[in-house]
Length: 194
Ligand SMILES: CC(C)(COP(=O)(O)OP(=O)(O)OC[C@H]1O[C@@H](n2cnc3c(N)ncnc32)[C@H](O)[C@@H]1OP(=O)(O)O)[C@@H](O)C(=O)NCCC(=O)NCCS
Image 1: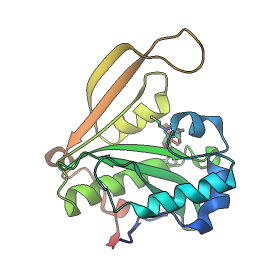
Image 2 (image 1 turned 45 degrees about the vertical axis):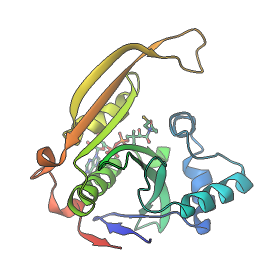
Image 3 (image 1 turned 180 degrees about the vertical axis):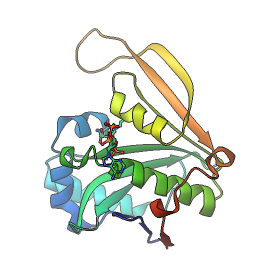
Image 4 (image 1 turned 90 degrees about the vertical axis):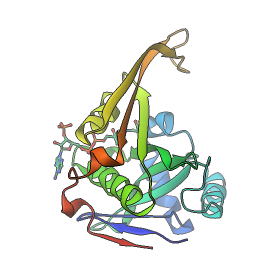
């Protein structure tokens, strides 16, 4: 199934093989590769395989990490991704990763708002949640900016690959469909075309 969600500045859609160079570019920064585990880096053949695998999934297929490209209209290129893992019970975990040069412009907020609005209004989702390590302040600031509700702070819950021997805190945020109503400026979700 195709998907094309539009905001003022962005198009949210499935990846295609035409995105390979853009994927290599926006995953180049270590923060994207470290934090966005599903997408291969640098290796063109693996990225081709990844896009094929992604396109084999139906939209928001249960228990699969379905990634969507975020295209910057003015540049005509993919600048990041959103991911959604649905549990098949109208709940889903959302994730994100944007190229370093596209941060600090509200683009992630705009993209995530659009996707959350879409799944609440068009896919009957009732809860969206997300989590991150506590030191990833940009990621949980995004959750707060979206109006997500902090549900948990887990102490020393994650063992990172680096630095060795550390245990770090994690946080989890969520929002229900009924909490989302009225929070979305209309210009962040201007059209939904399947
Ligand atoms: C997490 C991540 C997506 C957040 O990106 P971000 O740039 O902080 O978020 P936004 O794109 O929404 O930008 C918000 C900033 O743009 C500013 N901004 C500038 N122009 C704006 C505009 N036109 N509209 C809205 N905000 C605007 C906001 O004020 C805000 O700045 P502030 O944080 O200083 O207040 C990004 O850091 C990232 O990709 N990280 C690597 C991957 C990652 O960590 N993923 C999560 C794994 S759990």
